[in-house]
Picture 1 (spheres, rainbow over the protein chains, first blue to last red):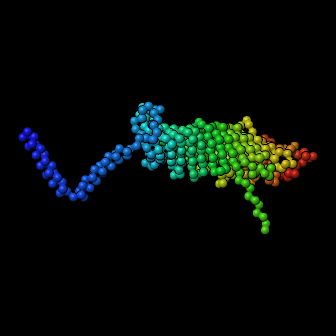
Picture 2 (picture 1 turned 90 degrees about the vertical axis):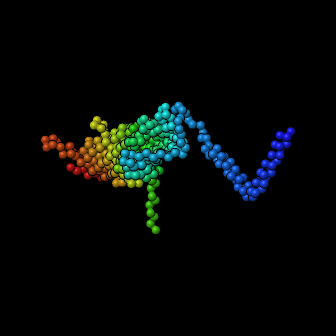
Length: 217
Length: 160
């Protein structure tokens, strides 16, 4: 019994000393403590939600991807160290087994020898590391603004090193709003702008309407 | 026809090579060009673009055993003009064609043959030249066959 009375006495005394100590701290230090706790919780929450998972599942038609990039911008340089190709893609996925890189909705800029620009858009593209070529697929649009040239087709192979584009697919080539050509297949030298259409060429040239004769006043 | 020049131009070929810098497009393989009543059929046609993107001039050629064919109708009343040769040059601005190599030009029943024929599509003047061959061979002279009762309103000057 003595032992019990002795411990309760000890507890009461400790609690009184804690209360005496606590009363010394003012209300501002209590606020500071609460602020620290809130900041800690906020940082913890940010850690959790900052890296959201990818919006759509990664295409794994080529085996298991090992890494992917979002909103990636790639620049390829030629042997002289000049930027020759620039590619932007909202999603780039790498497949180690096939050494393929899948690019969703790629937008590509390519400079030719004179520095004028080709722009290429497509639904998707595959870059093969071994062969160093790029295969564009789906609603491809090539444009060269300087010469008002645009080419539309569904599949195109690009030799990035040589700057050559080629396809066996049907295509439509427009220049300005006067020339329209349709053909089967194309070989395009992005450096010189020279085009070869190897088969079934149909060209239509819309002559400008005749200017009205100036009426004598 | 007068309205031909405003008609769109249609070209068909097996193949096209286009040199953007030089502005030259070479169509080859069963080439057919049509603009209104004007038609050209050849094995190869080289088209030189004008600065506006149109056709400034063209040079058509036929392979050895073939000949190219040019056809056009001056007016609705006149019969079509047919021209055959190894080489044809057409200057769209000057509206003039030049035929070279076994050249032959026919309008209705009238025929002009020679090594070199120039034909002005606007005023339908014809300039035909023979060819000086080696001294021992007879010159290839210009030959003109005009049918009096079907004389077209054409003025022509044959010259050596």
